[in-house]
Image (cartoon, rainbow, N blue to C red; front, side):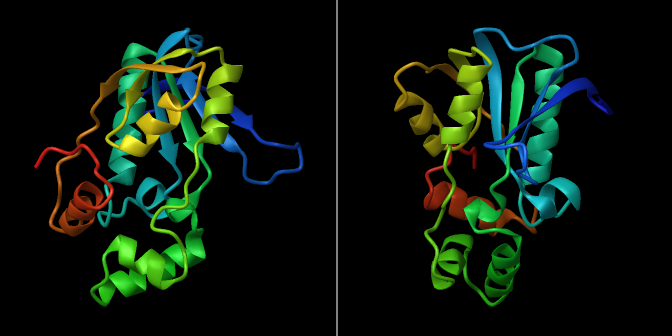
Length: 187
């Protein structure tokens, strides 16, 4: 798949061939990941990734990850767990609550969900399938670090920060990520 960052090989991972929304894997064309690889585990964000919303930094993180992985090698795992795992329709409801003054966490909880319902078991299984064992994790999210650290056969050898400058439109969102979720962001 040719992109503005270079050519990528793309694969789909699913629990069955009938699954309509598989996870997507990108690697630089002809350069499969090695046992030690840069890894980005990116959760789907329709509004940021596809529509370029400035409400979050997701699309910019995705694109910067593609640039880094194209330049240095590695693998991008695109997990299909929209809106911190609550789905697109509920994410839109959460957006309405955010417009009414809720932060992203309080909006999800108000809708009856946990603050973050994402899981990383599928990403870990994909990494095992790709024979990636030692990971340079491209993330600011301590939960992703913990998910890998809790596995017995994968090791984070280094965390590579993924800092995207804030905008007026996403400053409160990034503050919530830092203050509530403990994301490792520069101020």
